[in-house]
Length: 178
Image (cartoon, rainbow, N blue to C red):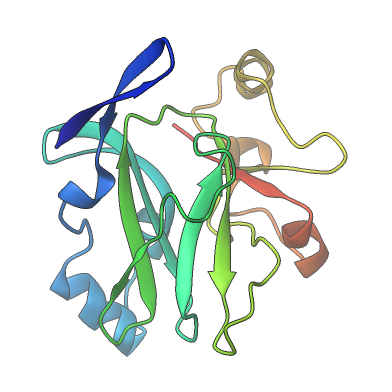
């Protein structure tokens, strides 16, 4: 569903992310609950996909004790009220499909804990690439140049196969990858 928005002399079209159904299915739920899902890297985190006829990004995060999870980023002014994620049953996974987001957009997850307290923004443990402080953004051209002939950030140790520490994740923002 698209709707037309106006503010002053400016107008734009917005696609409602809540008009799209879930991306993950009941088999994913079952395998995650059993701990036997062998393709979590394809399901969790942020992935550029086409879903129900629209191009965008699917976000999924495991946060079983959270009261609320939102995805925040440069595409929504880091405002957790704009893209609250849906909880998938008893598995503890939260997801949302946001249309019209391109690759290389910075994001984090905003989590309200079981005590109702807003937690510090969390980095994506499944991110393809991450920014480190103080410079927390990789430019498109720089990323492409660094990747060169490699097909994925993992080939340079920027992706999931690279070892991660808690300190690394706290200071990083995920980058929506190709």
